[in-house]
Length: 217
Image (cartoon, rainbow, N blue to C red; front, top):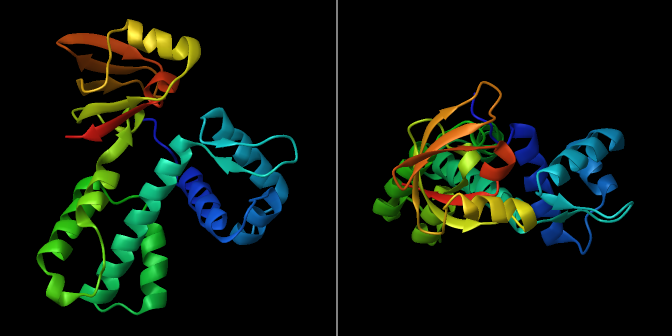
């Protein structure tokens, strides 16, 4: 199966983003209270997110989203808002139900479906009162990490976010910003990922692929 960021990971990132807009520091206690889970569970989740370079946390300190984590959290938030507003303004679903359904849908609905909804909302502005920069929304939704693409999907490299030896290895493979890549296959546990770039095949570990931001094309 394709290695992606799980629903649980996305929930944590979205909550951390939301809390960071409401208060100066986000602590494990705040996250546990918001998600109604044990602090031990939050601590384990934060460790997992940190291992993927999605958050940073000094011992007993606040939880901080990395640029990568913030980008994923913002994408989930945008997707949630689009789905909720579509349900409310177009399908006339009550707010409380639309909010709950959007929480469930945001993790499973495809990029193509959400983009289709965005196109519909943009073309039918008279049906709703949304004040959105639709072009920005489309860019946010189209930006993913290489490990999130399924076999057959194409992407254009926007940024290689790896550092140190990992970044050096990726660059030595010949991958650069602006290159188009095609995912040819993914191992059963998501590692490695087989891609084609510049007409030759490469095999990437998931930690390498998850550090490469791409625009889905």
